[in-house]
Amino acid sequence: MMLGWSILPWAAALVVALSLAAAVVAARAKERSVWAMALAALAVVVMSGFIAQLWIALDRPPMRTMGETRLWYSFCLLCAGLFTYARWRYRWILSFSTLMATVFLAINCFKPEIHDSTLMPALQSAWFVPHVAVYMFSYALLGCALLLALWGLCRKGAEVDDAIEQLLYGGVAFFTVGMLSGALWAKQAWGYHWSWDPKEAWAAATWMIYLGAIHLRLHRPDCRRVFRWVVVVGFCALQMCWWGVNYLPNVERSVHTYNINN
Amino acid sequence: MQTSKFSYNALVTIVLVAIGAGVSMALQSAFGDFPVEFFAFPMNVVVAVVWLLSLVELYRHRKGSAVAKYMLSMEATYLSLALVTVGGVVAGVMAELPTGKWWFVVAMLFVMSHLAVITLRGWRNAEGVRWRFVLNHIGLLLALGAGFWGAPDVEELRLPLVEGRPCSEAYVRDGRSVPLGYEMTLLDFEAAYYDNGTPSDFVARVDIAGEEVTLRVNSPYRYRWGEDVYLVSYEKDLAGRTRGIVQVVRDGWSPIMAVAVAMMLMGALLMFLQGARKGVRR
Image (cartoon, rainbow over all chains, first blue to last red; front, side, top):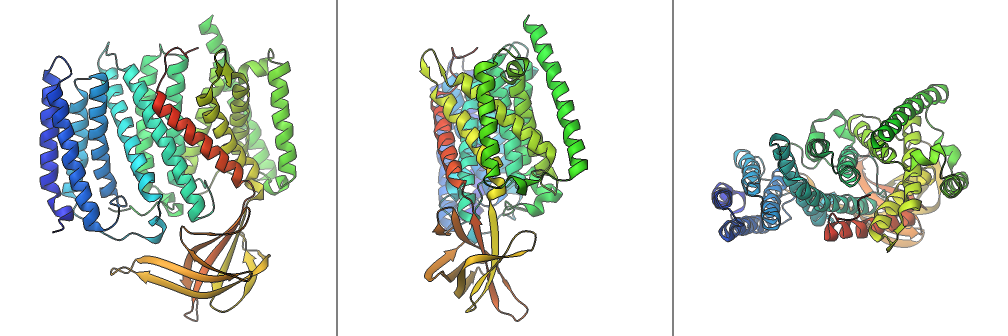
């Protein structure tokens, strides 16, 4: 039996419960906790299961609508949170990533107009899945970088910059691959690699701001507050790129309008 | 020492932005948009070679000059990043593209010049060639270069094809009709729809210069090197017949873009695998 979107509230509740349990265990433990990692990994597994059955039920990759990209974003956030915790042992990162993943899952639970299984011809391409998946993973890494930067800005003496820097290298690398795969796809679909489409333009701006953060860290590692602020500004630009462009008047000249209103 | 140098270069940056903005505005109001057509091949290649050679000359023989010192500074990097950010935000917000404006052309020239000179300086160190640096920076320079210098040569031709009627006249963006140089005939057009009426697929069988070809979105036909044929859309004409909208794109610079994309893909891969590395800080 195909369940599709209908079981989302149940799946989301289970994912959030597991993830929250992992966050509480991690926050209370002095050392890196195997239990926290196991619980967080279980949340990732449940989430993967939900996405897999949705993919089968829709009979197309669930990556077209904003609701579907929010789903992937939650999934990637859980992965990136687990990775950051396992690699750098930030006690609070699982709490942050759980909170953000919960927000995005909750939006999907309360927006029922995401049931739509059509896929327009322009999106029927081998590029579709890698293009979107790579971006969502990048957004999640950059989301974790934002959380650490905000923490660093609020808490004096927090040593977060090395971890932010590593997350930026991963996030920007995936972002670059997203842009390049988009360029190759655009060439195949329309004949141009790049056309300053509003979404492309915001992606370029976002990319430059994050590259600015990376170069600042190389050149002036002592400018910690400026570095953290640039990461925050970069994430704001990223929001414009992801969904903000849909609300701009020039969206009419965009080819990235498959996801408006859902 | 560090502080005074920082503020000197910061001051230069502000002055440069002011001069660049002033000159661009003056040129814009005097001549209108940048005369892109004037730089069609071979003019663009000549100017690009002269530009590149002067940057090499600047780097190799006038490294001590104020111009070279500033162009190699970190402030020039931040200015370049900021200029592309501004370009992106303007293109991301405005209905009209900034690409034909003088300020955009001046900004892009600065960004590419900076990329070129820092690549000349940084492509290797005492330990050898810095592959990640080279792939990312030269890749980006090639991508920007192919887009910038190649822009006057890119041709976009549209043909509305009606079934059974040969067509060799194409329309360019400003509505002029130009000869295509060969003939296309729509043999057959099919569109399929989902239950809610949105199109699920459309396919055109087209005879292109004697060759029978199937065109669909995401699946173009290569007529020859640098010339591809795309099915972009379809419409009903007044007589109720379906017209397939075919687009021919001529872009001889796309191989350079392909190399640039490949380099940046490898650069991004190294960035992910190696992460931030200690000990490379200046």
